[in-house]
Length: 596
Ligand code: ADP
Ligand code: MG
Image (cartoon, rainbow, N blue to C red; front, side, top):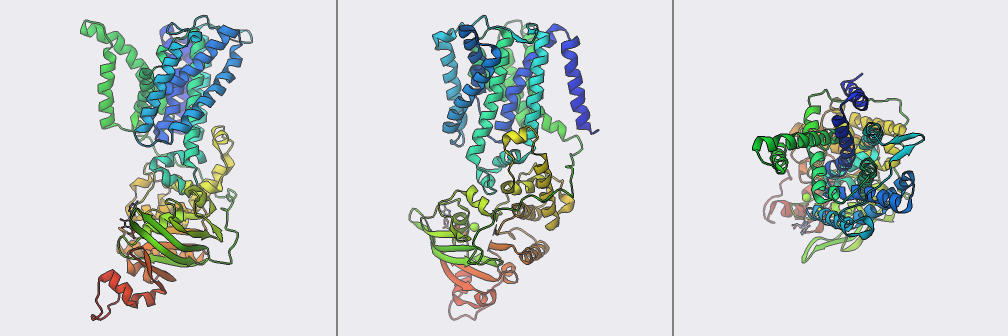
């Protein structure tokens, strides 16, 4: 058994002892910790993993609590029927809110979550039928067969069964195809979309998932307390939930448990100790929390769990060498013509024409270099091909099919893999997991399948694909290292492996040799030649003329957004216009061979 397994088993054993043997006070505390853990767990996924900050989770707890309070007391509906009702209502509310707010960037999203958190809070307090600020009393106890969950000890079992189940599903989710995609969003939405992830949709899925966990927590809370009023669903509590997720740490589901436990126990202790210590009553614990938060953000920004897990040995993913291969990526239908056909592509930024009626083709199996001085429009051309920027006019076809106007993730799904000019890996994730993200478009597993671990066959194949590509690019001994720990040259190679894992028909490389040392450049060129022998088609942007000379079949030279020349490297090297653009050579001077 691994240390992690032992830890989990020990946790469950201690937990089982609480309702059996702990004093009543601890049972109460354990109940609240369980309820808070569920909410914090949603935030681990939403904020910690996907990077979307929400201050409004307490409002969803309120939706769960008030739905059952209202239906059971007004209409005598059985609590077991109010649970699906609360889930459906939360689903609808979260979907609507998510649809509106998740499109916001930067600080607008947290502000929006504060806004609807406050709105729902006041709605609970001002609706006559919900009892206004006094709330709803007389909520029935839960009964299951002949067991009535009236006693806290009984309720503790129920709460923790649900909490452990949500820990399990969330853990599964984090370690899966949609989980990798969620993590990737932290590296930027455009990075995730470059591998076929529909980021807008996935954000909403994470948001709804987090809201549903909060709703179930609220439903349980209402039946534990047997009355509800608006105060636990306000923005203060929303901040506290976020606090739990941040303190515990966002990378692992245990962050939610640890965060909820620390905050709950600490708050209880401080509430007891501080007033006696200071000789007066007041909410001093809030001041202490504030100070602790600042200390934590200084020294353990990723939370205490992340900090503790670093002390444990790294988890080595099991690898099945005989895992059946993952389905190949979708291929273009028409392979007879050019693979990539850029026709009069134009991109204007206001008055500046960055790409000016550019036309060129890439045939299957070729390595084509797109070169030109700084500011010539190379990266912009790449962004037009990958769909990051819309064309001002002209057309781009891939495998005979126009891709103009398509989203980046749709283009990625067609089979265009890419690397970034500035390396965009997830530094805290292993090389293997980073590469596995590349295989996203070849997988099928969605959130539900992943959460219930019904995706293990596909997951094994995905990891096998990742490993195969890592071996192919020669990084086998680094497969389990954190991507961020590798030197820049190797990180670039990891990016290539990640792109290859998508089984691309066309590989776009933006300045792959930038920042590499001589030997690393040699190794990279050798790798690209090997890929060409395997039939991979490559379009690369490059600055370094030496690098492209011996490597490419054809060069397209750009200057001021226009195509200056096109041809075999040897001919380009002697082309006077190219020399002038690159070196500012005047007509009279003898033509030197380009070596930049
Ligand atoms: P290269 O990659 O060849 O160095 P770029 O494609 O990055 O060149 O840039 C081409 C020109 O377009 C430059 O003049 C640059 O300043 C301009 N440019 C690039 N992106 C933008 C943008 N988002 N908005 C305005 N101007 C841009
Ligand atoms: Mg560039």
